[in-house]
Image (cartoon, rainbow over all chains, first blue to last red; front, side, top):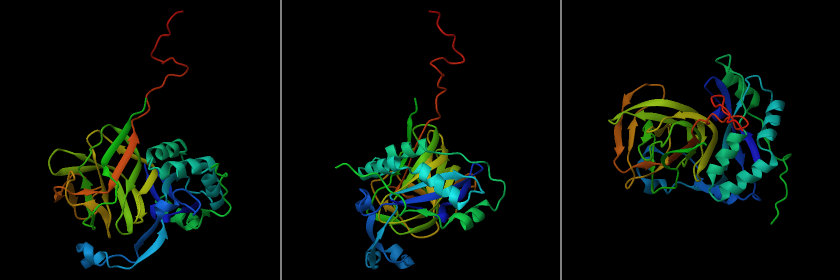
Length: 154
Length: 166
């Protein structure tokens, strides 16, 4: 699994700053087959949007989608190093394995409960520029190659 | 004990798509309880940017009032996308909806519970009158959450309860 900050989801809600973490499956993961998909290479034109048969003619490409997009509350002065710690804490190996197993069989209810149990709280946002500042500081953060899941048994 | 809240017709791969008319409300499967949505699922037909999703109160006519929403951001197409870590307020009878400025969500054109729409981003706009988006149209959106935690007494005793004399 590879986990990346997706800055398009950064927002404030109920006074707290929330970051979106996208979880991408690797080929060895169970959910990879569900999210390795063939999709249009470009947005549709207005004409294509009106006519599904035209839209079907738009060239397609293979791409890996996130298997899960999870929002975490963070303090507005969170550093990249602190965010990496948060990611490792929220997405510990057992949680990632449970997410992969549950989503493979469509049990997103179990995933939501697991992730709800992993929720963390942050301090209230003080300034209106918190979103832009957080994105500028944290958008490059990802956890992937250095992340090792436990071996699967069977 | 916590009860599960569900709202929305379901995020599935459907036979058509809903391009961006503004804010779309799915009438199917109104919320069965009050609390907060912790998960929203979406299935996009083409990559969507800047999507917001949230709940609306339904006054029984064509008027809906946004209750709460969260910014989701991009929604990639081709597979069901699951968003967790949300805390979106919902009240029994609420419906779920979304605003996206371009591209399309999956939808069915018949057999659904119906959808309503209004041009533009209506989250934060207060009560508005919506137009029918199609009598049988469902868009691919679904929310789930839980009711507020019951006041679980510590060690088996409530602060309002006198322990039995044994």
